[in-house]
Length: 334
Image (cartoon, rainbow, N blue to C red; front, side, top):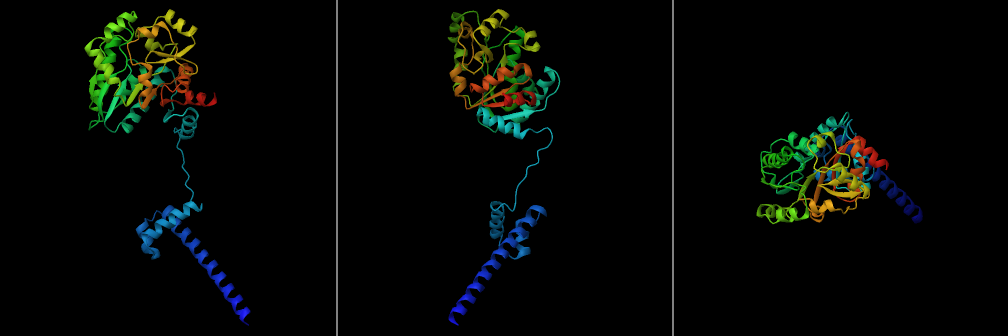
């Protein structure tokens, strides 16, 4: 009889545990459905089910851990989240923004400008020391599309490179830095010199100028830089501006293996710096200083620039990229 009583007690205890587990699961599902499907807030769920709010919170967390609740993100048309994530992993990027851009170079540049402006409006949150390249159609479009911020989000905007091209283009470089400084509440720091000079001696003479030295010192304070990525096939817009590098110089860079540049610092298909006599005539941020900046944002796109963009990513010249979907898909295929 005693053995039978113990057996009956075991059955009752087992049944009770099963009942408790079933009730717990029922409560988990009930709380999860009220919160996720019916939009009932946690305090209301607690009152309705006569349990504490902390218990509601614990039950919701447990429902997610058990797979009772599964979050599904529905990606709207025109957003390329999976493509962005794949490229970030492939190239070790901090962030990539991929935008739809159809049409000719001008339409691609316009789309990149809007995307770049939106990204900067979102991510410039204060205390920045910004550097900006002197000539890039995508940077021009970006700054033109930006809105003036009601509070200061940057301390200074420093030119990374002297003006490139005709005198009018060099003036535009100064205006670009000045406009970005105005929009962000920053102090502009101009580099009043050409980006490409006639000889290494001319470059050294300019570097001795006190105003230029002030800019060079500022490069060490940079927290974020905005750059374009140049290809050895300059765009019609850049060519019309009076691109400072002649076709003969371009051909010489090609013979050395160069495929693109950032701030007139050229690199090969693997992103390795290409040494040439031209490098000694560039008045702009040195490669080592550029690569030390924590956030290096490139705004560049168009199929013509795919090889240069790929190389810049491989070499770590930039760690944040804003580009169009055509380039992004090609980068992922390679």
